[in-house]
Length: 110
Image 1 (cartoon, one colour):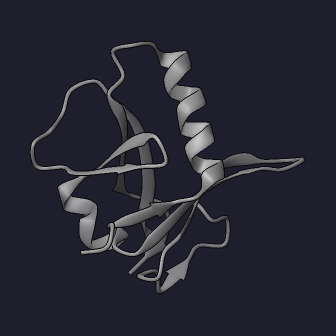
Image 2 (tube, one colour; image 1 turned 45 degrees about the horizontal axis):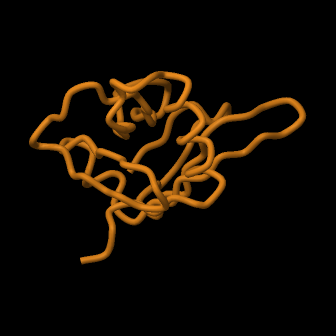
């Protein structure tokens, strides 16, 4: 089976940076979705200090990601990137499951 989510080299570098700033107790980064915004779902990125056995573990490009089991269906086939632009920086997601996105880009629906 292909990986649930693919990360770009740029995203991997940024994940390594933020994990090194967090300290040795950080085991990885957890990706998920939450109910938020005007379109229903929003992406979440959090530190992992304790492993949840129901999470999908992904090791790629020297980083460890955990995908929340409830979010797997929404994130399947996504690409995680990191953009650092003049007015905005952060993780971005290209998700083939998205059917629409709100105008401000905060939320999406499937």
